[in-house]
Length: 122
Image (cartoon, rainbow, N blue to C red; front, side, top):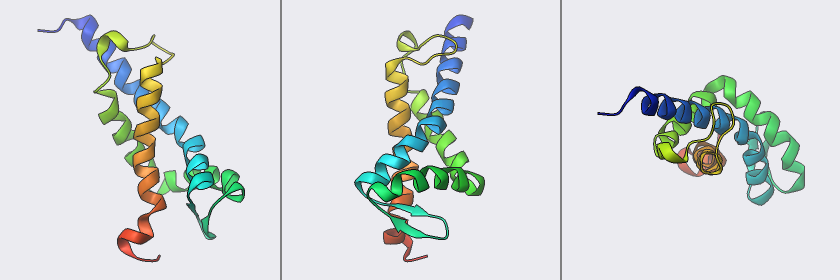
């Protein structure tokens, strides 16, 4: 049976991954817009250098309409896979937690960038 300290470290690791997944979603959306494309609210799909700044504002806009729970859920799932002995301090994440958070942010943001291929134009 795990002790209280292990449970606390696991909880802190999961919460840090949720928090950092949301924070890294802004530069991750900029990279997706730079490399592929990203939907900008009321503007269509932007790609290339012109999509970097608007895609970060788009993440803030989409967070109010359902992206935030999706990002937090992906961060929660990703945080459970970080081993307890690799977890960071109470405030700062370890390198593994940051890498897992970036991958967790890629899932909903990548899905958002190809959403018109799945459900049709919107």
